[in-house]
Image (cartoon, rainbow over all chains, first blue to last red; front, side, top):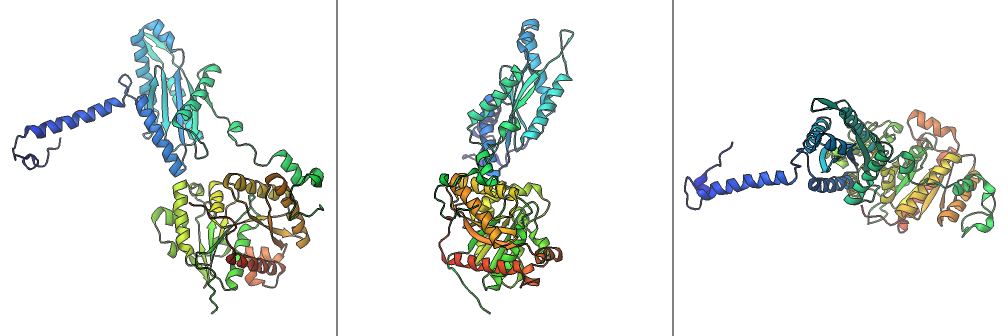
Length: 240
Length: 266
C-alpha cells in the first residue's frame, strides 16, 4: 500500500491525521469497488451485460478506425433447465461457475467474456477475423466437452451452442444489430441440434458478384448486346 | 535545364489499376513516369502495392525506407523518396508484408496527408496500385484525380477491369476512367477492345469510358523488365516506347484541365 505523499500538505489545516483526507481515500476505494461491481456478474465473475454493451461499442469503433474486425461469440448452454430440474438451482449455479472458469482459461487475455443473462454468454474478440473467432469457438466447445461437471457424485456432461459473427468496416451495423446477428447464428446452432457452431457461411457473406451474368455475356459474347439496346453509345463504335 | 511548373495548386494525381494482376501495370507506370520526366515535369511514382512491392525491383533500387517505415516508425517521407532521375522520384513500398496490404481508415488518412505534402514537390503523382479490389486499391483510386485502368485484350483482364470500374462508380462515385490497353497487336485491336468495353459500361453503368491508348506487344518491354531498366530508356525508338511517349503527352494536358474526378476528402 502506498501512503499519500504528505497528508498535512493536502489538508487545508495542515493536520497530520486529517479526517477529511482519510474520508476521501475511503470514498475513492469505495468508488473503485462499486465500479468493478457495476460491470461484473456476481455469480460467475465474468463481465456483465452492461459492460458487454459498452465494450462492443468501443471495439466496433476501433474496427472503424483501424480496419481490424471485431468478432463476437454468443453461447448458450444446452439443456440447462434439466440440470436445474434434476439437481436443483444451486447445482445450476455451480454449472454456470464451472463453465465460466473453463472458458476463461481458454480465452486470450484480450478477449472479453461476459454473462449475457441466464445460461447465455457472449465473448468479444477484439481485432479478430472470423476464421480466428471460429477457432476460438471450437476451443471453447472442446474444452467444455472434455470437462464434465461433478454433481452429487455423478459426472454430468455439459455442451453449449455457439453463434459466431464478425463486424468489419464493410458492415453497417449498430451494437444491437451486431448482437442480434450473432444471436441469429446461435439460434441456428440450437435448431441444428445443439453442441454446434454456426456462423455466416462464405456463400452468403460474399457480396453479390460484382459482374452479373448479363454483363459477362455482354463482355464475352459480342452479339449478346444488340445495338438497339445501347443507351448513349457516344464513344462506342457501332461495329464489333 | 527546362523547369516546367504546371500548376500552382498541387500536382496532377493519377493511379494505374487493373483488377487483374500481370497485365503490366508497374512497367507502364514506371515508363510513363520516365516519359513525363523527359518532357520536363517532376514526377513521383508511388508504389501502391503495399504488400508485394515491385517498382523498386523493376528499377533495381536501393531502398532506404518504405511507406511502411513512414507509417510505423515515422520515417521522413522526403528521405524515403529515391530519385532515379533529377526530376523522377520513387516512393517505395515494402514487399512481403501482408498486414500492410490492408490498411485501415486511420492509416489511409495518414497516408493521404503524407502523399499530399510530398506532392507539393512534384507536378505529377502516379500511383501504381496492387491488383485486385482490396481496400487500399479502392482508397488510392478515390484519392487521385484521374483513374487509369490497365488491361490486356485477354477476357479475364477485361472482366476484372470492368469489375473494378463498376465498384468504383457504384460505391465510390467515380465517373471518369481512362483505359490503357497493354500487349495489343496494334492500335486497331486496342481500339476494338476499348469500344467493346465502353459499350458495355455505357449500357450497364451509364459511364463514358475514355480511351488513353494501346501499348503494342514489343520485345523491348520484356527485355526492360528482365534487365531492370525502363524500356523507354534502353529502346527509346521501340514501338512501345513511342506509344508511351504519346500517352505521356496526353497526361500533360490533364495538368491544364480541371480534375476529372473530384478529390475526395480522406
